[in-house]
Length: 366
Image (cartoon, rainbow, N blue to C red; front, side, top):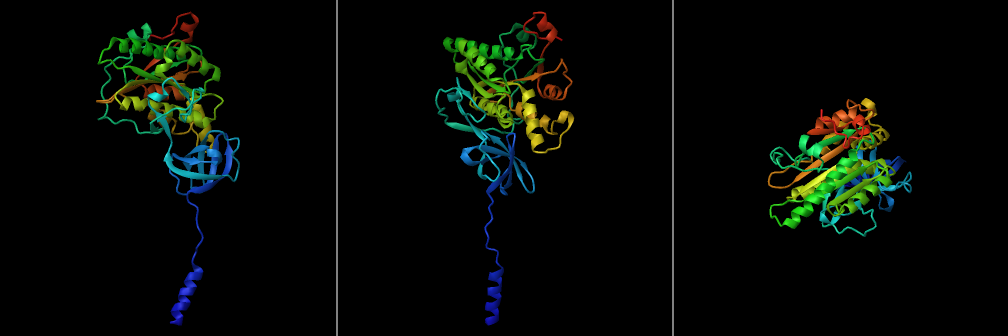
């Protein structure tokens, strides 16, 4: 009996009773909107993590001994040794008609000083694009109000049409004119009382733009009476790269709500060149291997998974995408332009020579 007791006492003495933190970690380093954290052994890919002060981040890099998180918010107060916690949730943004007429950031927080947004639903920022069976062929037109486009390069509801050209050739102007034309058609259609009329709601995603340009765009839409049908998602140049990376996906989630509830929506990504640059910054800080033009290997997937979410669904609505790409000296064979050209259904190519000759819009007809 004493031998058995001695064995039990020996096993108790050898017992490791220490606790292990699984869902809590510490910040190892912070740089340019990216925090490298120790711990967090149970964290999921793309899971939201919480830093001190309620600052939110996303776990993007899962390695054997650390987790790389992009920080969506003010990183000025984050420091080495701060505690970070997992939330068990994926990043979501508010959706619904309550956002129409508002200017929000990449997380759906209002930026226009018009008070809080009373959203009833939230959609995940990252979502798998609709499959083949769920889709319906594009057959209904989306009129831009620009004769050169509607007559020669018509756009359908649920299509992805790339607007590509050098800087200051009128790319954003075409997109804004299209949004204003949708509002004009909406007003006429709703006043007509036609029961079959379907208005088009717009989402304008500004990535890496100057704050003054975003304010000017908002004022233009408001003056034209189009802001009430539009959501503006702003991730300006002064914002950290993480917010610029997330903003287009947040806008897509807001557009998907309209599509899945039997309505039609138009989303403008202005522009995906700056979006790719923001993602390159994040990837280089996370020490991911770089490839052509220092972009990471998955930069094609970055845009394909975003643009494939635009579709016309069978028995539901549609989401039309107008991505914008800025070229350098008319070089459409660069990495990002060729990627997005191959993903989209067609292109509206703007020529600098035509623009300088006073031909506006400077649409190349072939």
